View 1: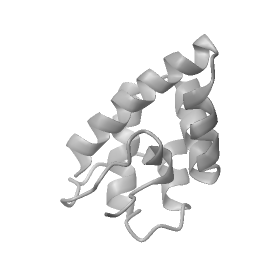
View 2: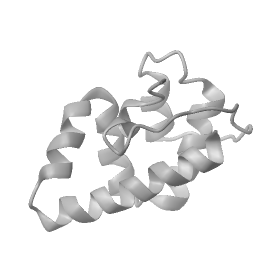
View 3: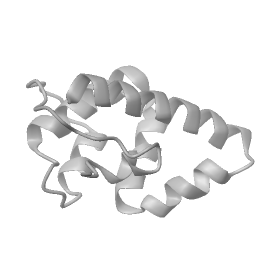
Length: 105
């Protein structure tokens, strides 16, 4: 089982099976993905994930999600938080993770 990206780890560990379509996207998620040091974090995959993030998450949610690449434990803290804002973020983040899995491989 390969963990594709730390940002998606606690959102239900997404398995990446197929190559992602080429999608040009540059943003905070793409940069965090590429700097994650994971062998599966190819420019193609990271660009695809950024494209999905652009259509799935607000700007502030994308910033928060990018932080999870450097601090995966933060995802666990958000998931278990009792704050309504964290609950909303987590719901949107999980939906984003599922869309990224389907769209990017």
